[in-house]
Length: 248
Image 1 (cartoon, helix red, strand yellow):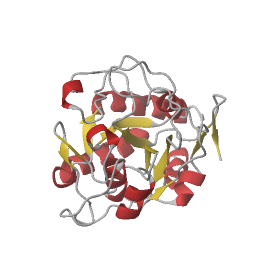
Image 2 (cartoon, rainbow, N blue to C red; image 1 turned 90 degrees about the vertical axis):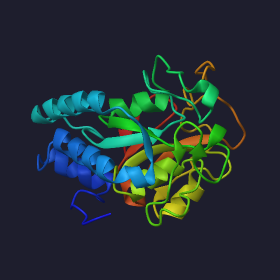
Image 3 (cartoon, one colour; image 1 turned 135 degrees about the vertical axis):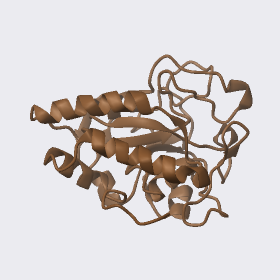
Image 4 (cartoon, rainbow, N blue to C red; image 1 turned 30 degrees about the vertical axis):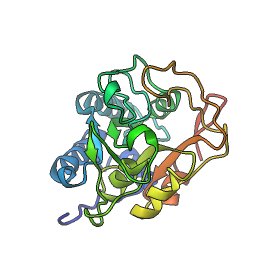
């Protein structure tokens, strides 16, 4: 994938620190992520829904906040999220062809919280059909490949998420897991994932297309973070059930 830039594989904690020190702007960091996606994602197919225009506006707002001395757990950090999360105005299909035109009107609660912490959401990552496979293929977006070896799978169902991290596109992701969907892709791609305790992170808006965005109580089913390393998560955000977003 070419020569790595010094920003490509920084952890979220490191990016927060260099943004706060004004060594790089949020917009510069975002443009770096976008350029890397545009250069390398044709072979990997991890980030299947782009939201670059709105991300640029969010990055400029983050820069304005940083210039005023404001700080946040994720202020200015670019990230992607699993396609299964509702993001207002973007497709949420779960890989189901009949849902390819569905676009929710509001963000999932976890998305609202990472945005409130200052994160810049630039797109969504690929999933298998109905989030129900150990690879990440569907008829809408096609196949996601493992960045380490594009003849192999990144796993599933958070396969696009793990691939985006391993490829150096972003440092932080939101995925989900019931039977290994966070853990297996992290193992396949050499990144970090954490399956939180049941009910700890809100599932509202991590719902199938055309279904009311209500919390889903499925035994063992959770949503949770993925990152380049455990330290990236530890210095990241806590998405607690009581509505707070706080730094560890």
